[in-house]
Length: 420
Ligand code: AMP
Ligand code: MG
Image 1 (cartoon, rainbow, N blue to C red):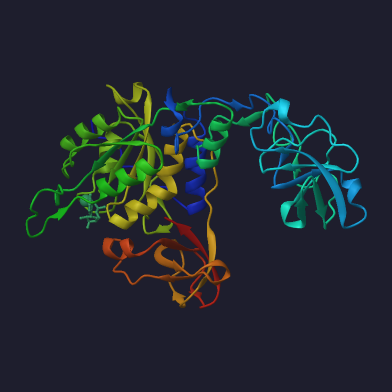
Image 2 (tube, protein in one colour):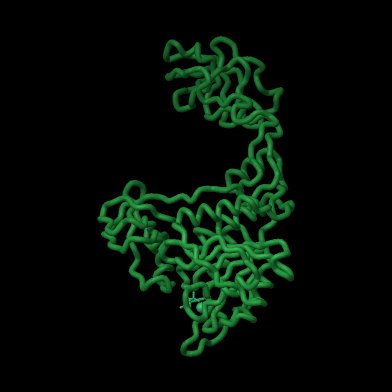
C-alpha cells in the first residue's frame, strides 16, 4: 500500500493561484434549486433574467416639477398654462394627451411624462399661481426624463448565470417580477482538522492541548463564500485513522484539511493522500503565512483512483495560515463549485503608516488595521506573534500584501491591502 514520497512542488503565489484557477475552470457547478427572492441574496444565479417589458415602461420624470416644451423657455421668466397634475402611478385617462405650446403639467418624480413635453423643470425654479406657473430656469430637451426603454428594452438580458446576487441584482429581479430564482445549490465542503493535540470547543483542554479553532474559522469562511460546511471529527496524527476520515471527506464536493502538511514527523496528510493515489498540483507556495499549503485531487471510492475525483486543499494548521490560504486558494475553487463566474482577486491600496522591514523571498499577507476615510486611509501592521496568533488577527481588519522582492517599505508608501 505504501506510496512513493510526494515530490515537492513549491510555486510562487501567482503560479499557485493560476493553477487553482485553471482547475476551478474545469469543475462542474452543483445542481440547481429554486429559492424565494427574499432568500436569494448571496446565492449564485443559475438562470438568465431578462426584462419583462421596457425599463422604464414609460418616459419617467426624475424630478418633481413641471413637464414642459423646452422651446417655450427661451425667454425667462416664462409663464405657462398648467393643464393637469400627474402623480406617480397616475391613471392613463387622467394624463393630458398632449402638452401644447405654452402649456405645462405639474408632475411628480416617477410619473409618466405626457406627449408633447420634452423636459421637466424642477419645482425649485417655478412658482404656481392659480392655473399658471412662472418658470425662471430653462431646460435642454430630455432634461430630467428617462426615455421609455432607456435602461433596458423588453426581452433584453439583465442578469446572467454565474452572478452572485447582491442587493442591486435582487432589486433588478424584483423589478422584472421574478419572485423566485433558480440558483445553484451550495457546495458541501468537508472540513477535516488533524492533530493529536486538538480538542473540541466544549472539551476542557489538558495542559498541552489546544481547542480546535480552524474548523470554526473555516466554517465561517465557507459559509461566506457560498458553501455549506460539513465538519468531520478531528483526525489523529496516525495514518489509518486519518485515511478513514479523508475517505469520508472525499464524498463531499470539496475537502479542506487543516494541519499535518508541514515537515514534522507527524505531518501525515500528504502521505495519507499519496497512498490513496491523489494527484498533487502543488505542495507549497512562496507565501507567508501558509507556505506548506497543498492542492490536489483524489478519487473517491475503492480503489480511490477509479472513482470520480474530489479536489482537496491541505491548509497549514497555524490558524492564521488556515484563514489566509483559504482566501487565496480554496475560495476560488469553492466559488466555481458554487457556479460563480471567475473573478479577480482585488487588492485595495492604502498608505502605510509605519515602516515595514521584512526578509525577501515570500509574498506576505500580514494582519493589519486599515483606518481613515477617503484619501486619508492608512494601514498599519498589528503586533503579532506569528501565524499562530489568533488574537492579533481578530484585532485586524485586513492583510497588507507585500511582494516577495521587498525588504523595506517606507511609511507613506502605497501598499496593497486584502480585505477580510
Ligand atoms: P500543523 O500544521 O499540524 O503542524 O500545526 C501547526 C500549528 O497549528 C500547531 O501549533 C497546531 O497546534 C496548530 N493547529 C493545528 N490545527 C489546529 C486547529 N484545528 N485549531 C487551532 N490550532 C491548530
Ligand atoms: Mg499537526
